[in-house]
Length: 436
Image 1 (cartoon, rainbow, N blue to C red):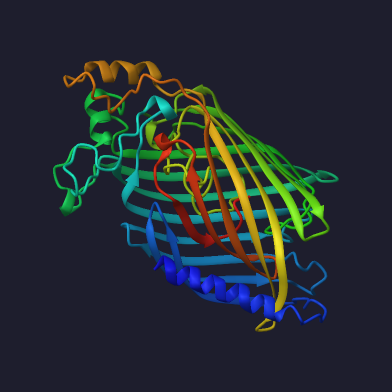
Image 2: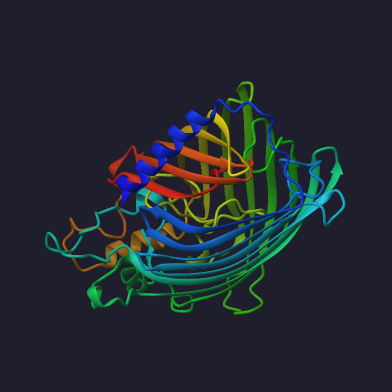
């Protein structure tokens, strides 16, 4: 499968290079534009993805192109790793004067959800075959998780590129031990956390989370999906009052995410970087929501980490979680060639990148140490607490993008962790959109 996908990408590059002789003016899109497509992707963490989606754009009279007036996306897909996804989201730039409106409604069903414990390097990574004989399947770092997510956000201009923003989010989450036939009865880190109290009884099966968000957004980008210059900065206060379950998990947090796009050579080469910071100001977050990265406007389906395709590429998915985390993404975006195909504007780009991040505010660290000490096992066997201090988790890799009309981005990325404690395999993902 991987060889076939690489072959298709090479064909796309060859076609694009051959098509660069077409010097005619870029097509200005107007009115409605429909893009029904099969969903064919790959993620090292989730497996092969297949399904269907449709992107619906409205460009109005074309005066805003390549920006659009409205965008609506519908997707239904499943992964061979045991997950499925049903999503509808919309981005409306002209419904609100001098503002925009965004909504997302998504259901995730994950039979093999990655769980590596708390606090980064404080949780040892013992490999995917921990506790099993060579060649046996292991579920030690898996759990079951289903999630329903409903999010809406809006922003209005204050002055210039500065906006106020507000929104809400509702999450219903179910978690449990893996119950697949091939793994029946095996021990898992999730079960160890339950047995030692690191996952408490009133949160072990998940629950409901209601979020209220308010913040400031500074956005001077020349384009949303494929920017070449400008800033995009969000600073958000997020309150989560526990008024539904009433289990004592109310909390208040702060999230800062800032991206900068620096033109290096015209619109052909851009240096882009993103800084992120998320902290818990007060209250307590339930374990099943500690991996959530708060944002007002989503670019990726998954908004979790650190690790996976939405934060630090190349780390074990959800491999680094805590009360507070910080991260950096930096990459060059080299637009190799522009061409026209099926009456659409296309270009192909490469994006070598470097990512890093870590826990800056620990989560139940003292309890984690006590839980490890309570295990009646070999003293050299430390599945819960490694005794190590947290440090920087770093990765490096490269991606390839095929972009239609500056709005629809097919993405292929490969990365590897620079420390084996963050995973010892080549991570790769085939999906949609730039990371930021």
